[in-house]
Amino acid sequence: MDKTGLGLQRKIIVIATLALFAVACSKSTPPKNTTVYSTPPPIPPEAVKVERPVEVSFSTYSKDWPVGWQWIDPSEKDSPTPKDVRKGVLRVRIPNGKDMYGGNVSAPRYVKPITGDFQIETRVRFLPKENYQGAGLLIYVDDHTYLRFERAYGGVGGGADGIRLDLRLRDKYSPIVTPDDLPTELEEVDLRVVRTGRRFLAYWRENEDGAWREAGSVDVDFPATVMAGLAACNTAREVIAEFGYIRLLPVG
Image 1: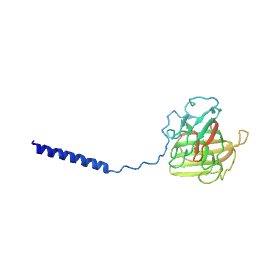
Image 2: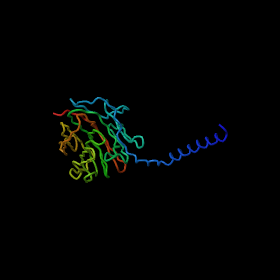
Image 3: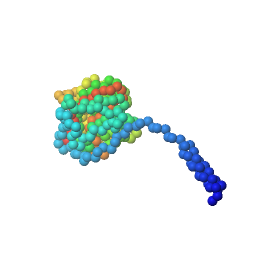
Image 4: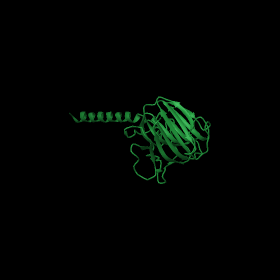
């Protein structure tokens, strides 16, 4: 090949390369999406059936949770939720933005897989004063299917200080009980959820000497195995929730 032919070949290669580069550069870069936190896949321990009373206390400090229980903080990388058990309770300092509603399911939780019928109970010390702040019990299937029973302030359906029971089924979020229905300004309450088949009953009381009062109930087709435990939400100023214990009881 003479020099003229070689030069022409080089020009063709350069032009083709530049054309490919131009096409690549002409493609628009998709805009960055707003961060939406979702629950990471839990460590899959074997689900337990509650056949005798079991109590989880926070009386001694340990770096390890009791067997089968998991601390899940979906936005831990960007906005971790501080927690400790130094005072014999699970003390959770909840930052702003930790929620369990719509596309934001970043609320920290402490849960265990449980199968069959059961009762779960806790004592929560919590004084919410802004919309929305809530802490209590969680029955969780996935990010779009769960039941929340909380001492709360505000939320869907209205109300200020009180007790809430909320159900989410896919894209439908239903307030079963709102603080308008059960107002209270108590700083400390006991909460209990009882599962019997597809029926979930929620109870609350002022203290361990008080009588349990029904807050509300709902029938829903949750799977036999769910994640049950504690959760805390906050879309206002930082607030602290303290959980005294978790108690699991058989039904009947």
